[in-house]
Length: 386
Image (cartoon, rainbow, N blue to C red; front, side, top):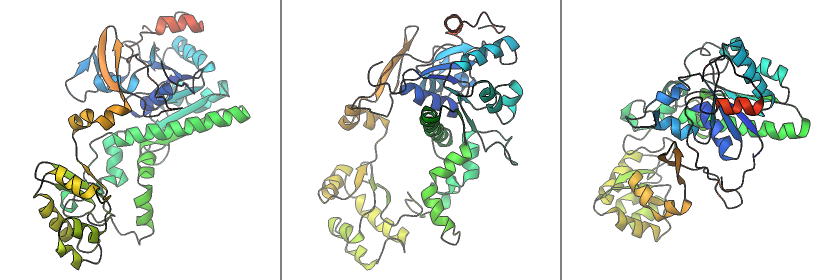
């Protein structure tokens, strides 16, 4: 691995499945931690067969590869006393354990926060649930779309007549993983000062509510008025025209906050002068702008607007992004390999001391490292099969 490794020497046990928990472990691994993934013998993480498309690499989904690169796989049947004891012996030498079982399941298996920290006081025990560990939603499935559904966030997307619109990403899962990493790093800093471990908890719902902190604060202090999405070209329910995405003669252009007087001059639209601000009659203003922008290609409008420092950008697809020199200079892609099979994926979004870390190890096969880890940590044979 090239680049700085600020968490080198730390051992993380990733006992989580699907996206949120494993994504947190991935981020810690990108920062230099050693990550051992604890998986069911044979089948492994259910995420191995959670397909985003019909594409798989080496028998595993591309989703699994993206979230579990640079990890080792240790097969353990947590219902087998011998394997469970082996996991505890690993935990005794670990710094962080991450799990995302439904509330109560980890306690029944003997790997909940209370049991783990009683045996391993310096351990950082980190968990992600769907909706917290108590209350009427606690035992509901913690799935991304369902968390989006109850969070209110779907009423910020799309335009006024669209109904609720979900994100096209597993945004609650990814945000929860990022939030958990923040808590883990803070707990590690405290442990460096006090020597004490910690229990770090978040949920999909807490993460996606925090994601909305800016607009939700407005709602809470605005007589609880619901967000009013624009009926035309909505991009942000709380921002005035011209904020939005507009069709041009050959593509689309994103326009951010810009005084209407400036646009009236640059777009040669004297009709905009009749509007005092961009909040009232927002849809009318946007339609006037849209009609004008459709007359010329995106490049023309970029030249006109950027020359006057107007905040705007072309709307690109992934092909456009990957071909852009600005993106290529970031060097955010890498090729990883497993058993001679290559896979293109992303790299860490962090640069430390000017360098981005790189590791060429792909996601492991189920239980691929069990024998070596058992030997390294003196764990014996074990009861579950790899």
